[in-house]
Image (cartoon, rainbow, N blue to C red; front, top):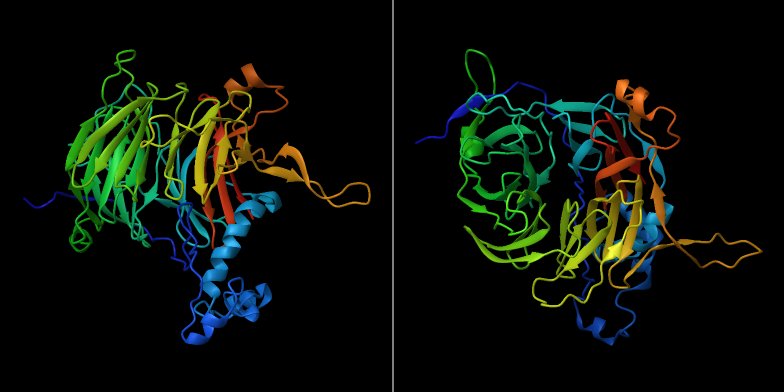
Length: 467
């Protein structure tokens, strides 16, 4: 049976830019190899000519587009490895105005200047970080009317790009549904709705260019396969109303989170992370457990383990380089290596007033932590310590570590001072934003950070570009 087709609003897609970058990108670490025997006579320390190691020469070459020159790729890897330690200390903030949108929960770089975001008010939009121009993307509606729900919509909690950056997965108009868009045009492609989740989607992870997994509050994990030929079938138009069409798909496999004896009704999936190295899918549930599946054409559960800190485990990431999962909770980041029965990596404490870890990202062995107290922290997993502030050079003091954690504090953003604010919170001196999402654009050495007020009853937003 051919997939059903549904219409969505026609729009002009945001212009695609070259030079995509994201929090999941990795810099090449290889060095140039000599093409003849003369290279064998070089000393071990001198792996390429000194002229090619010149930063000035490299930057000048990049300006004129000489990206394929000998040694350039290796130099980029070295530059990023150096920047991962030095960049956080020199970043400066420029706030971005998002109008009256409510709480940005998810974000991903589309290219060098555009970031796609999802909000609590169920808005999907693209912001140009250069011009601050915002383009709203219509959400995909279910094939059948959605029954009225007692609770308001939770919005869009996850946005993920596939490895080749040709497809984007996120929530639909109904937050229980999985929507797939084509890139770079953001045309609708397909929607997983009626035969999928029965509650809000909180986590999404791509296993390959055509296989994506979603996790929901209904305690299930669903595996979806996207047919590449669907791109050609879903670009037709309804002749009578002129709306683009998209297909409706069903999951290939669905797995239920095992019941915990202490909390059988709180198996809500909160976050997912995929290990391409091991072909394994990790998930955290709000009953305080970490679950692991072998992920191929179907999902085969390997284990479920109790987390050391069980309150508000809301974010999960995986680091291929270190073979570690990191889980963010109310006050700690815990590290898990499923192949080790006893964990040797001690948890780190965010110590940000108990407001919780709200977003995490790995780059090499540095983990960036977005807190509920409006700050970003940076932790070196290998050294097992936070990056520290550097003292400025002066006649009275010598340069060196101060021994104080490096912390970037974000701006005030926008807050709707409605009746709730006036009656209960007016006069509060400080009300920081929770940083629900952040993503790096390493080729441009920029960091996008967004969120909003932590209390659920407050309406507001924050977005900033750190560069």
